[in-house]
Length: 372
Image 1 (cartoon, rainbow, N blue to C red):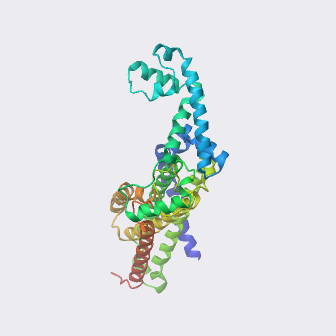
Image 2: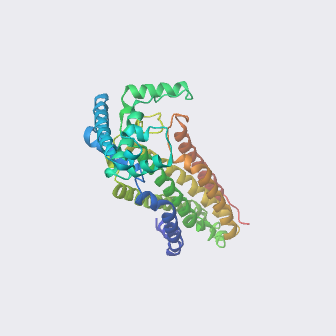
Image 3: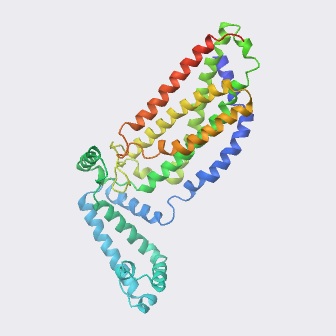
């Protein structure tokens, strides 16, 4: 245990923190800060506020009667908009007096565009709210099945609708924001693994022959792997935990956590009727499984690197390619009906299985290593 603690301390030495923290600060400012400071962003704020009002009024699920009442409220908003337009001098000059004449008209002259822009910035956001309410009503009434889906997918959608999953209130902006934070947080975790874990075995290349002289020395590789796994999971918890705490405090989406991810507001339908809270936990678990594999691979590459430059030459391009081509898909829209229902389980299971195989194979080879 004392040697294990010593290895953990070596991995987390202050020099690595001095290297990692500036990188983390740059990545935070470039990729993460925006998702905290500007959520919801732009016109999405009106949609999000409308969804919040629906939850406060009806709970995380609505009924047909609730939406009929909401439609009546929308009509009242249209009456107020018509009255506002009827008394607007620019509207009078263009001889229009109702919302539909202004926004549903095929007329796209410059004066009409200017009037629309003026109205959108008037009346405390009344016209923005009308557009968002209409969008929500259209989404609720739309057919969730699609001819391009497989028969199994459409059957799952029908089953979910029969159980009322489609009636959940979960704005797409909430899930998109979570996906963005999870992807960028996972990217930061992979950078941390490269920074902290990659030098772990390379540093010992000059004393490695001495380790193989004794039976205890041959077990050092296994112990260092366990220490690397511990540090990798610890860093993952610290980074994702910090981002999640910021997500809860700054974005405050807890109002929607109990809603089904198969909401009529969602751009996709899913194989399982998970709550958004459960979906977040499953997504985090899959990231942890990827981290386990990345730690093992990074440690083994570090063991065979001939120089620090060659070590970085192997790890940095490989990590970048994984981030660009795979990480986004792994951390976004799990269990979507357009993919295989078991795909996330397969990815997570395959990562853990491969990590276990590499771990056992390499530790056994190290235990039988001959001194060269």
